[in-house]
Image (cartoon, rainbow, N blue to C red; front, side):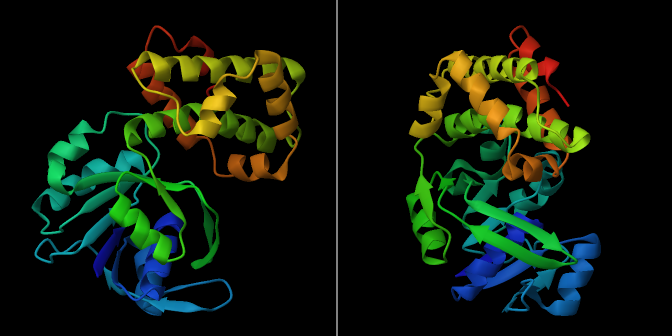
Length: 281
């Protein structure tokens, strides 16, 4: 199939690499230094030197009827690509990024018949001097079973959710405290105190309460089970997790994303977000 990937950071590059290796014609749409590097390489290149050739473009060609346009830009950047996506002849457009905001504006912009959303929950990746280091685990979730099958065949284990909006909001509720703790751990080079763990646990409980209040069922099952744990146990888990390398790696990504998600959640439930705002990094 013909596919375009808009946003070739670590996540977009991973999908471009895997899909190209699986035999699909992939166009990588990039800008800035990443565009320059891709133009020089003509491929997504792994840290070990293995390559997956791709076509490189500065913008999405609206006249090309791509089977899939995969949009992996950050949430604040998506507004900038919507005009091109509206005009695009792409048969299917899948957005894939962290957000808590309503999905209806995106669906309306590109048309319900070709819209879907996904999240790369099992893709752990980053770019090192323009080279991709990725680890792919189960956990990527999409709203369309056909594309779950395509991604799975390309080496990205993918499951489906009938309610991606609820799934995304549940995910945001979970990762907000984890990312915020990670930022604090990186800043001080030490785990959080027990008192701080209690504050983060309170914020986690409030986040899940907001998601339910907006009419969603917490998903997937593992997150739903976590949301029902007694507060002391959640506090203990967060205290322990703050001492792991996984949280340090999460915190190394910076404070922008947890701030963004907290602000989105506070906008959705302004009278219920005090505990969340208290942990905003």
